[in-house]
Length: 223
Image 1 (cartoon, rainbow, N blue to C red):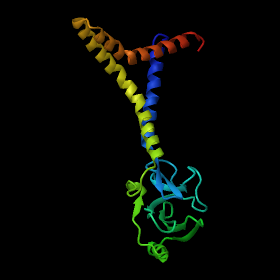
Image 2: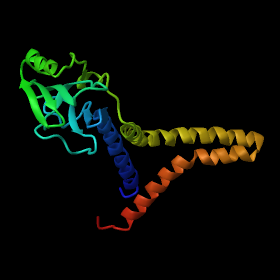
Image 3: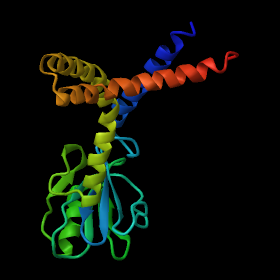
Image 4: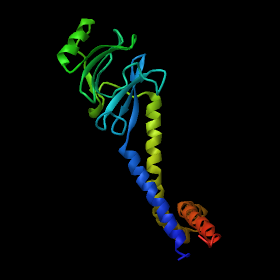
């Protein structure tokens, strides 16, 4: 049993890595630009919404965690901000589906009602035209990610793929190594032998991991 324990342990180590990658892909969070005063935390999909897996959460532009007074609620739709005009938000709340008009400067509601027409009337009283809405569940069209969010999303996706890439690298590397070994036997070129050894690196790394765990388990016979 002790002889196969290192291989079982290595298999167990690889299995959670794949599961973690799948769980990571199941959630996606991004930061969207929303004018000079605010940014949007976009969950698409994930946990943290008042209802469902898709929503926006309005945050201060200078803080990734601080929101606005009284606006601690998830939003399913929000107006795409105009380049000029008062700093107002027109959105639909996720939980109760109320339509809200919120003043970012004064941090107070101008409207909080189940009636879209009523909220739109308040909006137009501020001299604004009917807005275009971005929907959290439909790609947040009209809004754009911040550069830092784009970078973080790209790095996170790469990290999620890393365990799966590592598992594929071992058999593919061994196959490539065998091909280069056969080529070296025919050509006797040093470059072919170097590529053969290079292709073996993933398999050798995995073997070293197995030996290290085997040695560790063998040094504790009581466990």
